[in-house]
Image (cartoon, rainbow, N blue to C red; front, side, top):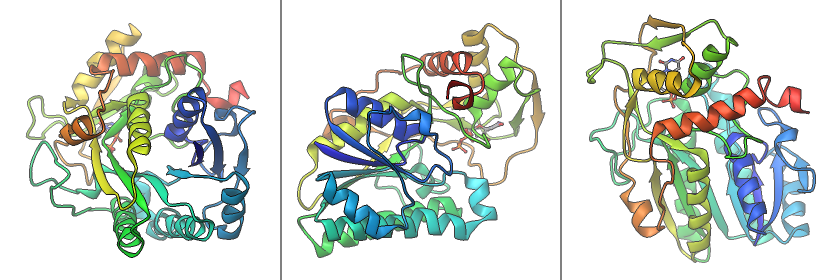
Length: 331
Ligand code: UDP
């Protein structure tokens, strides 16, 4: 298939590029490199340094490469930042998606796999979270993606030949098995890379945000899914896309790990002590979030291979130790 991957130089997008390229698909990458890394994309893959706002140029590239399906990863992804800079988030994530969809319409591309998020649920009414749960996002990031889900539904309603799958990610972590690509964010706010940076001495310590939650050990519980498993679900979704599809799947492994459990797993994986501080809750963090991903497992035949958090952290540790300065050092 001819596939456009937006955000292909980013953390998850670059893992999608790698897997799809290895499967023999013709992949094209669009990335504005605001958060992505040119070095995360192999040089033999056509690469366009473009912003999603550049509708006309996206039409050209869709036509030039005879793109059949778009995997839309390009987005800003920090909850805290979205609260500080909501307009930037809505422009990039919501208006950016609209520009992309308009380009797809003009180029006659009618298939899309969209990166959505568990943040569209907000404070869940029920745990584990099912796709049918009420969506009530509590921050601009979650809303910026939720709006895109609604726009996609409307596109299908207007054009029954369009089809999309929206995948709602839980906490994505880990790195490619060969250690060549991995997570490299600036700034980095996520738990797993920051815990490993503390183990490496790249940061002084890690602060646990809140120890008084109503969870077994008092720290927040999240559902960590390996980036390669997550990407595999995108490929399965792409392969099953049909006219008129408007499907939504949660992607998590269906098990929650607390922040303390992540710290213990990181100690095992690294064999190092992790200097830890215990701090206040981070605003906006629900106590427990984990997925029911039965629908993806049943309808997409998705089977996450990495079912323990140790495997996820091991793979992230391999990437970070091989690339202590991320992509900067590796070129
Ligand atoms: N967390 C933490 N210390 C950190 C970063 C995160 O205790 O330095 C906690 C955070 O409160 C949440 C969990 O780790 O409960 C996962 O946070 P992350 O930012 O990785 O992902 P999110 O759940 O916000 O998508």
